Each structure stands twice: as structure tokens, then as C-alpha cells.
Image (cartoon, rainbow, N blue to C red; front, side, top):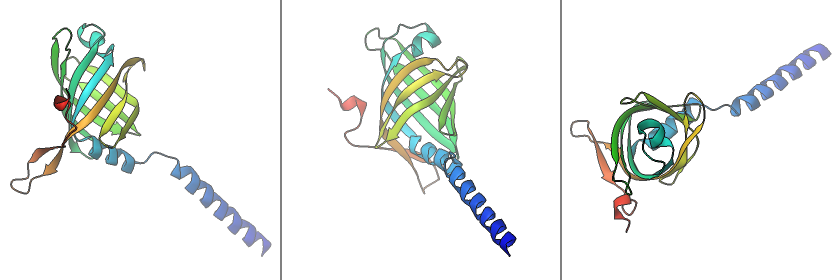
Length: 174
């Protein structure tokens, strides 16, 4: 009888350890929730070597608008518009993105450039963090963005359309 109790106690302990360890692991549900939240249009500023590394532009502050379109559970496609107000340089690019284990991966089509967003904050309509080079892990730039639109399902044809968030548009600043 003592062996049965010992065996039962051991099974219970193993179950508790497995539950504790499992609760520390990043789940796909969290990736999905972040992908849903990122979906939409974000405007703000990017500072760093991001544009120098990609296009040979100077290390400056750029105004940017990034549009994330979620097309599957953990990612999708997007567009990015960048403008340097000091040099009047601009760039447009398209990309593919996905979230895996809490990291956001972006692949730009035009120049075959890959970045990772590993250190970021995403809440209350604000998205800020650091772009890192996918291959080297080196710091590329920091960014601060505000969500200006999000997408809803339109029951008339099933298309997505943007709805503005009042007072959060980058264009409204003076």
C-alpha cells in the first residue's frame, strides 16, 4: 500500500512540475493575439541605421507609416512609407511578416532585407521597440508608432476597410 501512495505522490508531483514549466512557455495563443493587435496602420518615427543599411541614406529620424495586413493566424503582408523631413528623401516598400514565440519577423521584398523585432512594447495603441538585423542580431533602429486605423470585417462583400482612431493620427500633430 505504501508503494501505491508513493507512486501516486510521484505522479502528482510530476504533473505539477509539468504544469508549472508549461505555463512559462510562450504559446501560439499569445502570438495570435499580438498578430490581431498589430493588424492595421501605424504612424510615427524611426531613428537609426535602418535606412543607411538598406538604402545608403543618412542616419536620421524618418517619419513612417507601416500598414500590417493580417492574412493568416500569425502574420500577413504589409506596406511601409518612409519620409525624411530633413532631406526630403522617401521610400516605399512591401513586406511579409509573422510572429513566432513573441518575435516579429519582417521580410522586405524590394531589397530582400530581413529584420526582427525582439524588444518591443505593444499596448494601448502604441508600438515601440528596436529593429535588429535578422542575420547578425545587431541593433538597426528604434521606433515609436501610434495606431491610426484598424480593420473590421465588412459584411457587405467581406472586404476589409479602415476606420480612423480620433486624435491619434500623426498628421494631426502641429
